[in-house]
Every structure is written in structure tokens, then in C-alpha cells.
Length: 102
Image: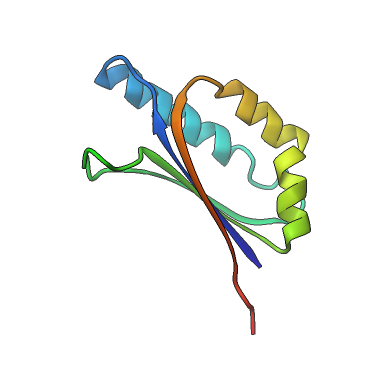
């Protein structure tokens, strides 16, 4: 199994705009549930710590294989979400790692 974790800092000229943009990111990624083969689990979290170095949004997802993660990266539904959110994310961090299932 592959765990795919992505974290973003989100753009906003003020607190209200940033909050609205965070909700757009959350809703857009949650809309992918059940639409992409091999995507076993998808969860989106919003930071509530308000620590200055924290990211605003995290995407946690699980895939059956590297091939499924690769397919997700180019899947039309994922690309549609990515394109719709273009310009809202100002920083991005990603970690993918393999977990052995016994």
C-alpha cells in the first residue's frame, strides 16, 4: 500500500478570503472520493493550531499500489480539481511512502 500525504499553505488577502479558499480546497479534494480506481481512502484536514509555520490543509490518501498512485496523478477528475484550485495554493509539501500489509 502507498500512503500519499500532501500539505498546502493557502492564499488569502485576509482571514475571510483564506478561510473560503481553504474550504474550496477541502471540498474539491473530497469530491474525488469514489471516482478514482485504486484510491482506497481519502481524507482532508484543516489546521486548527494557528501556528505560524503550520500548513493550512492536509490531504491523506491511500492507494493499493504505486501504479494506482501514478494513475491518480493523471486521472481526469484529479486534474480537474488541480486546475480548479490553481493559484490558491502558495506552498506544497508531499510525502509518499510504502506500507507493508501483513
